[in-house]
Amino acid sequence: MCIHKRLKQKCLECGGVNLCPHNKRKFACIECEGLGVCIHKRLKQNCIECDGSNVCMHKRQKANCIECDGSSVCIHKKLKHNCTECKGLSICEHGRQRSKCNECPECSIHLCPYRAAKSTDKTEPYKWEMIQQPTSGSEIFNDVLASALLQKQEFNSEELEIFEESFFYDSFVKVGEKYYKPVGLCASCARGERRSRFQGTQKVLHYSLKRQGVTLTRVSRTGAHKKKEMRILDVLDTNDISQINDRAAKNRDSTCEKSDNRPDFQVKHAFDELTTIYIEVDEHQHKMTTTACELKRLNDLLTSFQLQRHLVVLRYNPDPFNMGDKRMTCREVPRKEREGILMRELNQVIAQAADPANFKDLLTVIYIAFDCDCTTPCGYVHIDRFADQNAIREAHARAGL
Image 1: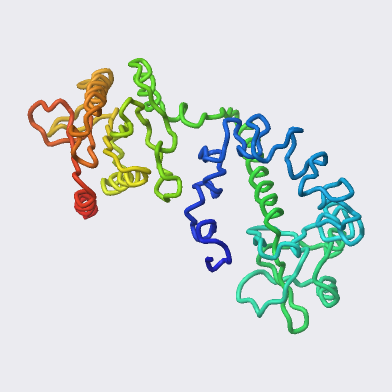
Image 2: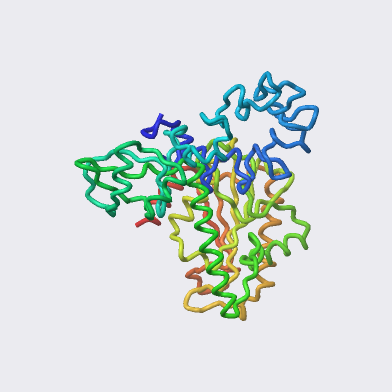
């Protein structure tokens, strides 16, 4: 358990290893194509088309199916949480749906004290709590509110309108010698607040740009903003090279926190269980990233395999580079010539992958059209070999200096 009373691997604040870059569980994240997500972009267990384990013979969720007497169905043939006779969790003390009751506080934060999420902007103070004298924040001077807090600390929507006040996450009010502040919103309401605030800002921005005559076009996930990478994709397709583009690494250990890295291309070949081949399209040689960072990323990909194997990475630069004192642009070395060199090296690696003896090193990095100190023709290809983890650590230490 972490300091937030959650499992460490599932805690967002602690950066749990079970969470993906989208702050969701890796297993159930659609964007990351988690192991629990089906081809219909749903959780496999809940997908009707895939006959998920949670789907009954009536094509409903088992727990909610009345005919199957699901675990969420009460003796009155209703969902337990919505049944007024069973006094389900969604039924308030007035015998109504809690979300539709005008007499109850709109936000049910008192039902989920451990899921409370503080607002970062304007908030609806349905519930207040006593605090010590605050050292920061904005004090509210409202006699009606102060009088009401002497009676109770929970209010509904109609009562909040009487106060005629705007409340923010850092608001507080002094009542006698005591201080009160809004508790915040429950997790569900906080998500709704953030979503509505973002969508509102987005609409204002789109309207402003439209008034200026600017037309917005939707950009696809990869193709429209990675044209050089898509050109290599076309080259691979033309040469009948099977590959996986911009996806989580195959044969990875999904429980490993280093398994989230995505190579540009994973080459599929007959011997990929012995030797894994990646192609990285490094625009401008990725000069904005240090050599140590690039090496660490490759090592993360290497160590996240379920079974240890040789890794060969072809790093291809489609942009200008230096060979000695000479600047090599696309005029000196045309793109088609570079792509031909890439395919030559790739086919050679695929042919050698059949025999593990050809790759005695743990990691092999082949640089194509990268900066070099050569003064004579070198073919624009250079290779770094790392025999084991010690060699990688030493190279990382040298690059970090």
